[in-house]
Every structure is written in structure tokens, then in C-alpha cells.
Length: 273
Ligand code: BGC
Image 1 (tube, rainbow, N blue to C red):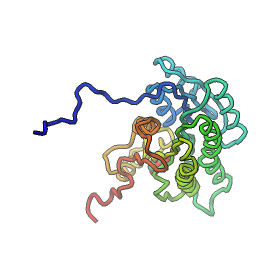
Image 2 (image 1 turned 60 degrees about the vertical axis):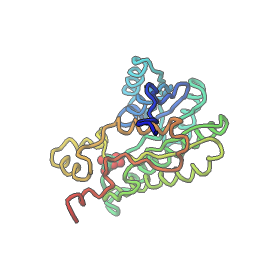
Image 3 (image 1 turned 90 degrees about the horizontal axis):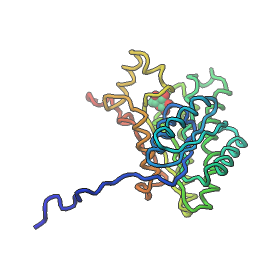
Image 4 (image 1 turned 180 degrees about the vertical axis):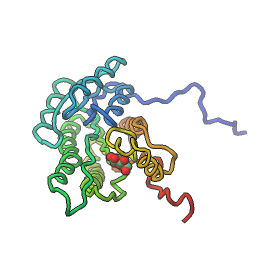
């Protein structure tokens, strides 16, 4: 007789353990990056908090992690500047040792501008931060991870790696580009024990889209674009990233995990076609 619940083992708990790992989270002085950094630290990782201009906020994030028994050190620099990225990684080498996890989170939406009426410098800035930045960081990480024989690179893309968004051609192009960078790099480094994955957040409540969720009309319009009846919270993304960073995801590479509450499910069809 097959015992009911035979495959359930009472008392066995499964958890994510990142103790002994060093993780860099770019743009972690606020928003998604901050939550990701805190969560990785909770799982035991030593976290390199990175900021571009908000040093005080980055220091606060690090202090919060340390206050909760975790480990965190702050590093500043511009991810769209190759030599600044190199010095961030050199400083991490000196202060924390070899890097195990890179989360390419730093990014901007950019201004809403229609192609042709836009300013080319704004376009270039979005590409520089959202696509060149992850490339420069991944490049430094890969050099080190090839030496250690392991590592995970997690690129934060967006539902806009799939979804067109009028007024944001630069943003959508950068995120779609980052998605293909993820797959191509994953293929390239698969023999070195390195995994490369992407997480595509939908509408998550952070400062980046406060102008939308802070206004009742635009908030209502936004909720109609999500199948589930709520916006995402930063923790929704932090949990997905922590899972992908862990050995629980050791056979996952070159793919995107979409965390969007069903934004990509054509929610307008919920009410018939
Ligand atoms: C953008 C947010 C936006 C969301 C859904 C994200 O990638 O950064 O501003 O709310 O996509 O459109």
C-alpha cells in the first residue's frame, strides 16, 4: 500500500543559504536594489552596496544590514563609466575578496520622449546606464568568476524586454538588449560554472514609478494593466533574485524569470474578447 503523503518528510526544512558568498548589487541605495541587497544579506551573503550619487542612503542601507547581523560594505561609482566600474571591482577584491554574485540592477526609465522629438543625449544616457553598465560589470565579474570556477550574474530587465512602451524606445531597446546579452553570455560562460539569468519585474512600487502610483487616476490605469489585483512590492523581486542566486537554481541559466503579477497576460482579455 502506498502510504498517503509518503513523499512529505516531517521536520525537514529547505532554506536558501548564501553564507560565504560575496554579492554586488548595483544601484542598491534605494528601490529594488536596496531590497535585493537586504534580502541577499538575510540569506547570509556579504553584500557590496553600490550607489552612484546617493552615498548617505547607501550608508543607511549598509547600516541597516549590519544592524540586523548581516555584512555590507558601500562602494560608489558610475556603472556607465568603464574605468569607474573597474575600480569598484578592484576595491571589492581588496575589501571583500572574490565576487560570487553580481546583480545588475542599476537603471533608469529615462524621460518620456517620442522618437524624432527627443534628445539623442537622453537616449544615449538610458542605453549607457541600462545596457553598457551591466556589460561593464558583467565583464569584470566574468574575469573573476572564471578564475574561481563559479558565479551567478543576474540582470534586472523588465516586462519591457517583451512589451513595447510608447515614449520609451531607449528603455525598451536597452532591456531587450540586456535580455539577449543574458542569453548570449550564459552560453559563452556555461563551461566555467557561471550562470547568467535575468529577472523581469513588472510594475513594482518604487521611487522610479512614483509619479504613476502616486496619482489616483494613473494608479487605476496601471492596475488595469496587471492581471493580479495589485502592484508588485520590492520583496517580490528580492525573493526571486535570491532564489536564482542560490544553488536551488543551479540548473537555470540563460533565461528570464518574469515577476509581474501577470502584466504580460493581456489582462484586458480577462473580461472577454
Ligand atoms: C519600469 C516602471 C514601470 C514598469 C511597468 C518598469 O520596467 O521601470 O516604471 O512601471 O516597467 O511598465
